[in-house]
Image (cartoon, rainbow over the protein chains, first blue to last red):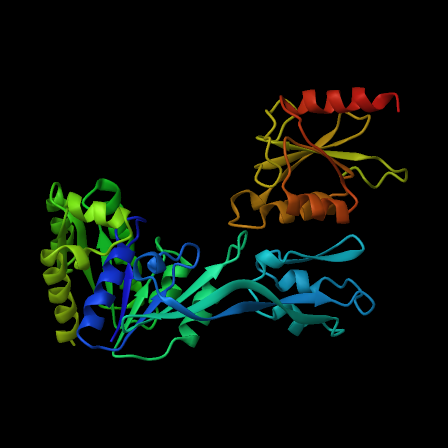
Length: 280
Length: 117
């Protein structure tokens, strides 16, 4: 079972749900793999505190032009959809951070003047803690493109009984890349107008991908009815409601996990885990 | 187009909110809706729509290519990002930032400052 934890709005509790789920599953002696795909800000490590096993760089291919061979025909610039390679004046400018590494410029160059060279954009880290195999990607500062890093992260992670994918916030390419291949997605939301708005967007996104999805309402309590109404109208089930509780916030602020400090939360996460496992 | 005159006429592009000399300047280079391209020493001008204004990324680079393709040698704007600056430099276009007010005021200011040199 490969389960994606996504949200739409940031800060609703994706990592809280993902890490607590990983911990209760590991306590049940399951082989758990945790992928922190929020490669701009991987926070799962703060709670799981894995022991690092290895680190390795992620590179993406970017073009390099041999100016001796280039006759400035301009075909590379014409095929590039991102202005990453720009023949102008008497040279060809390359903006590596805009390059999506499609290789089109190299293919169209009639003079074979373009080579692809690796450029380091991120670091993958693997670790382990209490039966959870932990993997994360971390983009270098200033890098903008996370999908290649998420792909690299997914490629190094082994298969397991339960793979938990902690997705980045939002509804754009990085989220799509993170949850692609998941058997199910849990959308974590909070009962605020902003949370509700972004939940709708997230439901549309996951719907387009055709992945079964359910909702987890975090900090449930006041104003939850609008979220429940949305789920009813979209025929999406609510997999769990996690009550708004000061003691949980305090534990969180110390980097402690809800299932370790609150038996009621532990029961809720065990129930959530079994619910996920029991559904086809 | 003014360039087919035999002699070289310097063209100046001003990032603008609209296609006229009395339009307010747009302080952004890459994402201004249009450029007003004027020829030094003449009252004639040519408005050039900037299709890059709403582009997701790389707007500055494409805007730089656009003005270069129009034979511009000087750009007057409010500010210009590093990628657009690199592209304009490669195309041999001079960028002067810090301009504001209307397009006409920007051109007058630039002409006054460069008349003596």
